[in-house]
Amino acid sequence: MDNFIEEVKQYLCLNSDVAGYNLPIKKVTFTLTLIKGPETAGWVKDIGNAIDQLNPVTQNVDAVWDTFLDKFLDCFQDTQSEVRACQELKHLKLQTMEVNQYITKFEELACKSRYSTGNAKIYELFLEGLPHDILKDVMALPIPQDYAELKQKAVNIVRSMVLMSNILKGRGEQRTITRLFNQGNKLYF
Image 1: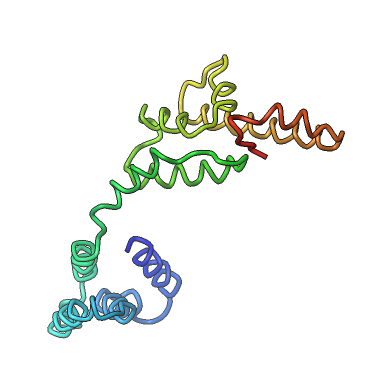
Image 2: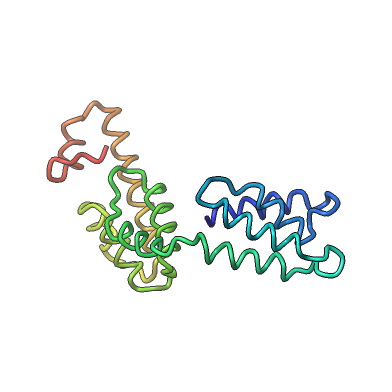
């Protein structure tokens, strides 16, 4: 739902130089043409009928678009998305050395969970998602003071581990790599 509305807004912005595209009634009518399916047909028809009743000269005001967005959110908003994002965030783990993917997913879920990066819970959840060997190095002195420092230290540590692994692989020291990065039968490379 959020992505759909954002895509519509981007399309309307991109076409703002097209005559009439920035008029509220036209925006609503255009958006209604994109909403498909039997579950939404009645709602689309009702909104369309309400739009048809408006005077395009005197009632084509920003409140029309704003009201449409409010009604759209009321009708189609996923009321459980925040709860699901919170649960997924609690269970998110860095499974491979793809630390950038982990951070991107972590921050996406944190945003959906309505956590700010200044929240102490974010710091804890980020740490909980790190494997033991990385967690140990991240929490070594100096201890990161905030989320930004924590994230950067994790990135630096993973980069160092990957570099070290590549060097050892180049030397043919596969056993050393396995011994260094094997944690409970889980190899991170």
